[in-house]
Image 1 (cartoon, rainbow, N blue to C red):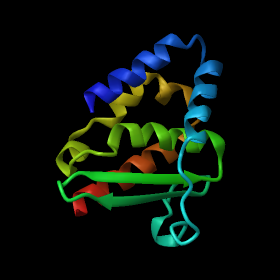
Image 2 (cartoon, helix red, strand yellow):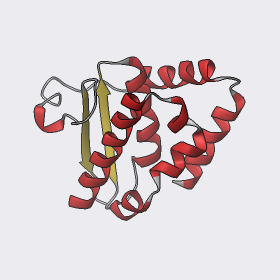
Image 3 (tube, rainbow, N blue to C red):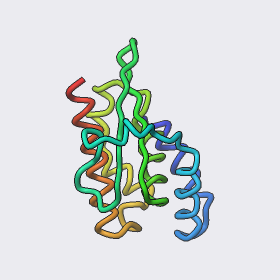
Image 4 (spheres, rainbow, N blue to C red):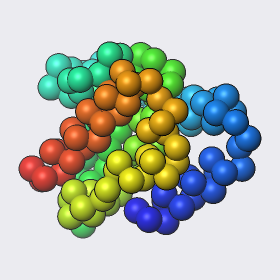
Length: 135
């Protein structure tokens, strides 16, 4: 996870200001695979987000977890893409042991997002952590 965070930090460092960084986050969200209608269920919906957000966890035979997600808001789709880069393909121990607040402070996202978006981001992180802990 540290390597994925290093890669994201390097990408963000190459971008000049927050306007460019927001565009980059939105662009990342454009590459998310869409969820099926059945996956856009109430059970997969993330509570605590102002936008509609769905996260789906899939287990692999090797103990690693894969996450997929979608939202009705462009910036939130981008935030989901960032989360998937950090969390998908990791073990439950890696996921629950990762300091997400420090990671997003390092990227500068915690300070750049509105309170509402920040709360939604951490609601998504908490959902990923809970799903991982239950697996």
